[in-house]
Figure 1 (spheres, rainbow, N blue to C red):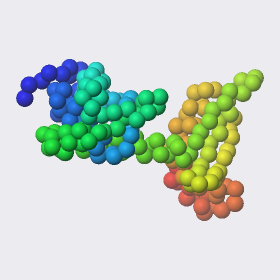
Figure 2: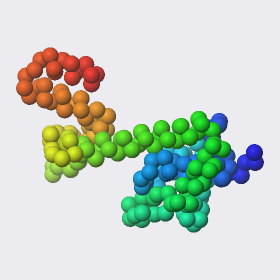
Figure 3: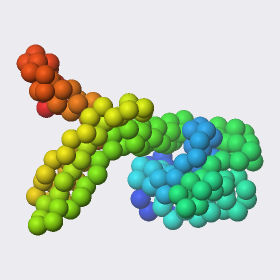
Figure 4: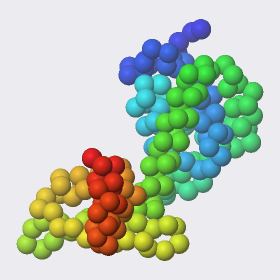
Length: 196
């Protein structure tokens, strides 16, 4: 197979020609069956060493020009696959290795799950007059607020650490707060074990 793409940052087994990159993009969008952020798609492919960043952005632009992919909301940078793109995916995806297809889809699903967690568990960071930050963490079940808690931290770095840690395990932190609030020692002990 001829290589016609830059290979900087591409891991062994990654994609080294633009045709395969285009097929993979169509396959990924066809698999998830919903709009996806343009930049997230590019980042997933590049950060997982599947293809070179510049080649992915160039190929994605070409897919848009060909009508295989369209913007659903340019302000939000959301794209989705068209009927032509689905045809490309379904007829040509078998040319890609199962390893590459699985790696790409796994990364997309992981990011989609992380975005869901962030949506259902909002975190706001507000600078406090006089210094420091208030970090408000919340948990919803999609219909109602289950918890809202505001913490004061002295630095932006610590505020970001609280946000990151909370999004890693919001349900465990909720269990910990609930167990503490109702004085349930066994539940509190179990919640602590799960977090640490």
